[in-house]
Amino acid sequence: MSSRRLLPDPFTLALLATVMLASLLPCRGELARIFDGITDAAIALLFFLHGAKLPRSAIMQGLSHWRLHLTVFTGTFVLFPLLGLALRPLGHALLTPDLYLGLLFVCALPSTVQSSIAFTSIAGGNVPAAVVSASMSNLIGIALTPLLVGLLLATRGGGASWQGVLDIVLQLLLPFALGHGARRWIGGWIDRHKPVLGYTDRGTILLVVYTAFSAAVVEGLWRDTPLSALLSTLAMCGLLLALMMPILACAARRLGFSREDEITIVFCGSKKSMASGIPMAKILFAGQLGGLGALVLPLMIFHQLQLVVCAVVARRYATRGVRRVGEDDRDAD
Image (tube, rainbow, N blue to C red):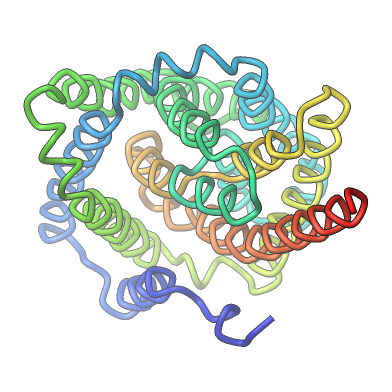
């Protein structure tokens, strides 16, 4: 593997720079309130554009390969939360309360879209199924993730209120629904200007990260979070991936899926969306802004880790696929 592939991508570097900026120059007082208002507007625009981007045909196609999608959704919204709860003893021993809460939040998030599809393609999987599964995961996650967070946090006696769950559904689902309803008028423009959605994704995430870490730094994030807890968060995120990917691969084989479908299940079911997760955290934990920086740290760590791990796994799937084709050709001869 070349050293270039191990280097962080530009967006990860931008995230790190944003965290550093918030640590050195956090926004306070009236400026913080102005940034909060801008961030709320950006989040609404982001989900409006995501709604306009999703074709109605993708929703209808989601019904056709229902066994694959049900397997992905089970991994994303059932197995992940159960693993998060199972790791509670380790979380309480190694992490701060906010970092463990952030880890539970990661477990409740929907799958990514772009990178799930990209890794499925690299590995030689069922790309059309990945497109539908990842898109449907995000659509369902807008409503289901807040409900899961409410249930998960109820098990630990705190966290987001059910009013917060209702707020996130209204503040995210309503713009999404309005955007989807407006697709007939603006869908063509969105499809022709896809970079606009990418810039909105990244810009919104950077805004939320800056405001969240600014508030957290003012409240003493780096003073109260030991280095050992950060390293433990990295280890626990790695453990989640190390458990989920083999479980999904084994389940796909036991359920009789093809190799291509197995690849789709592994990559769509094991990944978590930062593009959806950070805006959700900003709304869902609005009453805990002092701790929001620590709450999104596990998601930022998991995001980078899943990119590195999935890149390695995708190349191994692709290599095995080429090798198998070569063996089949020799058998035919």
